[in-house]
Image (cartoon, rainbow, N blue to C red; front, side, top):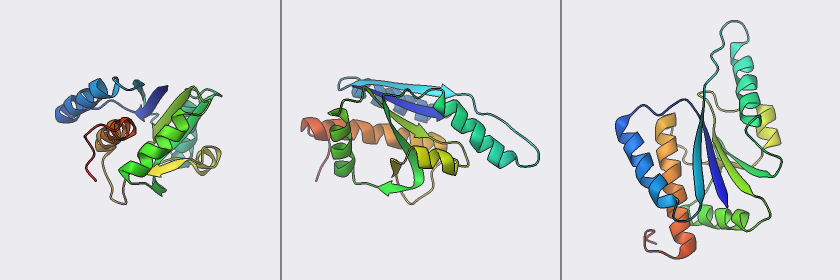
Amino acid sequence: MKILLLVFGKTDEDFIIEAIKHYEKRIKHFFQFEIEVISEPKLHGKQALKRQLDEEAKLFKSKIKDYDNVFLLDENGKELSSVEFAKKLEINMNTSKKRLVFIIGGPYGFSQSFKNKYSNNISLSKMTFTHQMVRLIFIEQLYRAATIIKGLPYQHN
């Protein structure tokens, strides 16, 4: 199983870069994992927000294959415990889909049409985090889910 994380813009905080590398190395013991960074479109003028969301959706769609199972990391998505996320991940890993794609939207989230098309929405918390922190939190949760699935002693219940 391959898991792809799509994000806009590079991570620029050194401590986050190091922590992400740490978890990436650990995750690769369980499945193929890749982070793909997309350059964020910068639009200005009237209707810029709608155009930005539409342009971001186009960029994301260009990276998604028909066989992918897509999850949006969205503040209005469903909140899951780590164990619930692990179960969801395991179920999806056992389907015929070749790849799971998780997407962190731009600063304004996702367009409504994009959310309608890809309705698997997950929220990491009701709290607001920077996009850089969301990357790290999600990757740690992905690693935690892998250890839960394998029954390894990382998660404490």
